[in-house]
Length: 224
Image 1 (tube, rainbow, N blue to C red):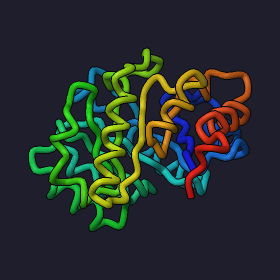
Image 2: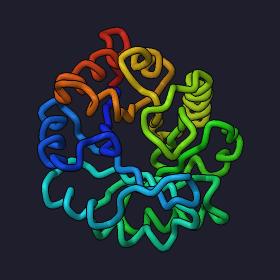
Image 3: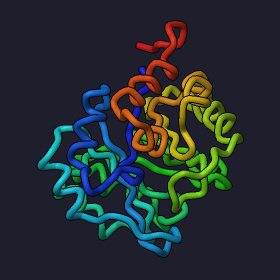
Image 4: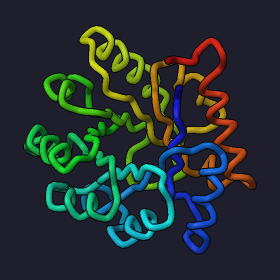
């Protein structure tokens, strides 16, 4: 089943707890938390205190996407705050295998993200060690951007690599995800759709989550 991971970057932080409850009622089982340092990407977002607050408020899995340079010092603080999935960028890690080992050593699921222009081949050696690969379908740093169509083919190629090598990592996509492309992304082999504006920008966030999940999981697509 393709899951929806609502991105709180697009939420109304004045009523964040209420909006988290809404997406949970819609069937979300995880939340995507974008952490930006203003260096690796041209924006600054949330930090450890917000993750701590989320962890106290909800039992949803907190999926932290670390868009930061040199993420290693941040791994333990975010894990202690409640993050149970930590995704780092291939482009930001000079020793990616060591970083992935550190994440798994904490007890978290380890993810690796790729920017739109970064080739899949750069992950060839690390794939057996990761739990998740995040394919960016926008250039990271800001919400509400237009989906980059080449991401669909990239996801399909990654899914083929996974099948050919008998691996079990999940494929996630982030950026410009909505009703217009959810079905195509599911067919391409994606397991988790990160959705921000299309969920929290709607009048009914719970209904938006349900709609995206239904579009990404038509009867002929449902996977065991």
